[in-house]
Length: 332
Ligand code: ADP
Ligand code: MG
Image (cartoon, rainbow, N blue to C red; front, side, top):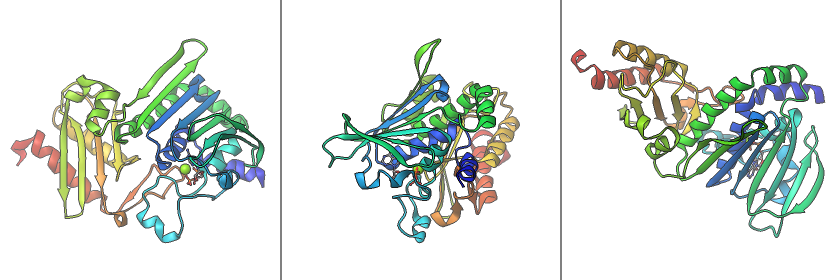
């Protein structure tokens, strides 16, 4: 049974980016305004996510690493109107199965923090009192070391895994308002370097400036498209040929109601459209699709990056028209 859990967990925690994404989402769900991600050797040695969120109550110390245990969903119908990132209670239990997990946590009711160590089936093996402000630190050691094949792949592709992680973190950094997010990496060779940081600004535009710099931000136009009465596409796109894009389409960030998701069809549309605008570069885009909750489903894949949007082709068409009106007005 343990072996099966280990295999299935490999599907929730697919890679480095998913592991960190789950932890950052938990910190956001906990109401944190300060989140610090510390990696050692690109995350292969250690991933530490520390927040100033609400902390975990002692009665929850054991539950939180058990499969399907979540404090975030009371009834099934809540799924329709869900505003938290987590709802399945799989991330921590899966992480326990594939890595060494410790948690340090303290709520505002606790006099001291507790440091908890879990075994690979998610059971607490040690508990001690330590000093810490209110909040939670989750420490993940030796990710995938228990899955020899995955571990080999992971180590071999570490630079690609790291690049994917960076893109995912940037996605959260851009959309999170009033959250200070910082990610650093420490390697034996080059010491500690900061790879992403935001300053807890109120606006997405300011986050773009902090993450990518003023030069890149200056190449962006705001976009605000309304369609039907219920759907809105809001964000920023690069001016065609402005120099903010790159030779690959890796600066595209999509969200559904503020939740970072992959939207390959939207990405394809943008890339083709910008070619038709005679842009030499792939477009940069930061787009939030504001949809009624009944109009999409995020629960399609374990990592919740894929969404099923009911009116996707109509939405894509209106996005296309809106961009053509701005950048190819003679078509109209
Ligand atoms: P889910 O997020 O789907 O509930 P997880 O396995 O990610 O499942 O987390 C399990 C539970 O652990 C959460 O429901 C929450 O109660 C608790 N938890 C995890 N991370 C944190 C955190 N950073 N701060 C406070 N509580 C946390
Ligand atoms: Mg979670």
